[in-house]
Length: 184
Image (cartoon, rainbow, N blue to C red; front, side, top):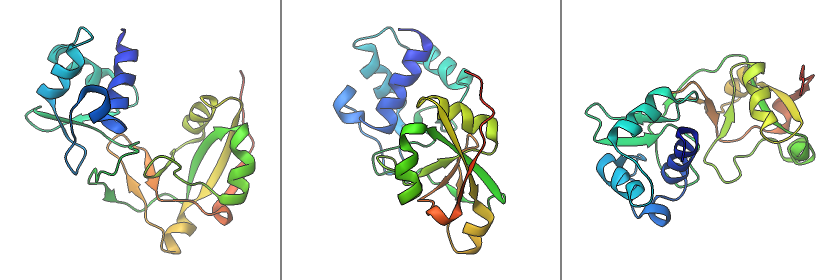
């Protein structure tokens, strides 16, 4: 298993299925014991602390964080299981972006952005990042999210440790479709 595959596997464990995949549990803030995580993964894959540290350090999306003494690890966001990752409420910029695939447009245009299986809707700080996210779902569609207006109307925003903006939902009235400058 290469480092990218291992990173995705760790994401699956720390965001969605810690008990069923390797038999570990997360605390209420999403932290897992590093020794238990390593032992669980090492049962079926070549894995140790050095590999884990390299994955955390080199992950381009900065998905994971260690605590200060590296005895605990957690995913920074993206959970489908109920955890409180101790996000700090933050004032968003006027506009943030959401990239998605063409197949989700009809639903979004009716329901707005909803977290579906996750705890929060994820928003990007720039168009380029949102297009990359949308491309993962097919032909990308880009939404401009009027976050300044949402915040004035009482919606809360959080900024994760890796720079992803999070909110519980985005009603349709705060969304505008944007032209995608996309080359496949």
